Image (cartoon, rainbow, N blue to C red; front, top):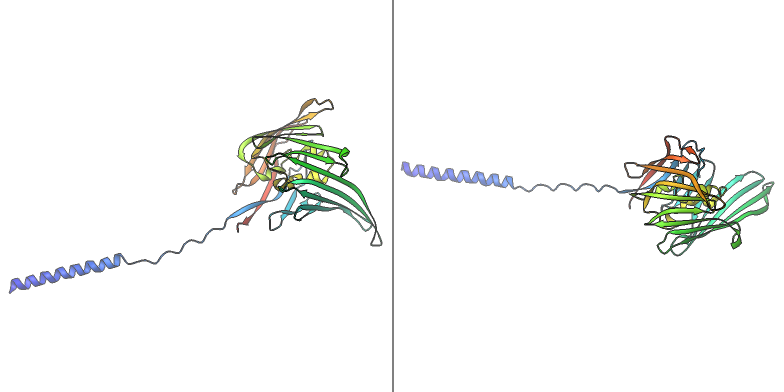
Amino acid sequence: MKILTRYIICILSVIVIFSSCAGEDIMLYHEKEPEPEPEPQPEYYWLLESVDYPESNKLEMQSRDDFTLTYNDADSIIIIDNDGGDYIRVDYKDKFFSFSRVRNSSATGRTSDSLLIYLNENKQIDYALHVTNIETFKDGELISNRRTQNDSTVCKYNAEGYMTNMDHYDYSGNNNSLSYAEEYVITDGNITEVTSSAGYHHIYTYDKTAYIQSASYVYEMPLNTISIKSRGGCWFMSSLPFLSAKYLGKASVNNVSRTVIKKIDRNGVESDYADIVYKYVLDENNMLSTATLSGAVNGQNIPDNYVSKFSHFGKEKK
């Protein structure tokens, strides 16, 4: 009897032990609640907002006022606000867009500029018509409207989409009134030479980094040169950098690291004019933060810390 009793106790003990293990197994493999997926982070892209140029520019090269840009929902520039006084509006249509500004205004008169820019089938600038009107008022009423300027600019492109020529005419429709011309040389996807009828020859050396769009506003870049300044402040010429990103053919694939400028005399002989080196600094979003120039222009050394500063703002990708 004692043996039987011990046998029964052993069997009951084994049953209890296995029952406990089974319970633990159930706890170990209890299904957990799924963790919530993290919220997707928004992605941003960046647009140039403003450029601040060096405080003094006594060097003989292209210069411009600090400016601020305003864009529409399609990221096209609609306002160019120059600190020097010009407030330029841009309006877009299907096959052309326009610039407009009021140069001066008073109770007795107003001078205004209008620039109509027509695009070809590749959305490149084909030609631009520029007119200046002087309105005269008396007792608040318009008594005359006189057109004082009616010039035009024509652009030409190669098969790859790069601009090769830009010709400016003092009188629209008169091919004998050519007053300014630029010719471009393209090498390995970069604008390596610009020769102008103003008597300057720009020779560009490039680094291996991908093109920074904002860098087109730096002094002596293609479309922003002393040659254009020599045109006497022609509105279209001075506005070219604002157009270059979208409408003046392909941009260079790399960034200018050095510009050598030659002065061309009446006999076609070139002499040294400038040798400029560029240093670019990017911000945390890989956008251009500063561009520093060094070297010499027309026998004068470029001052230390000759820096242009750039600011950008972000827009969320939809």
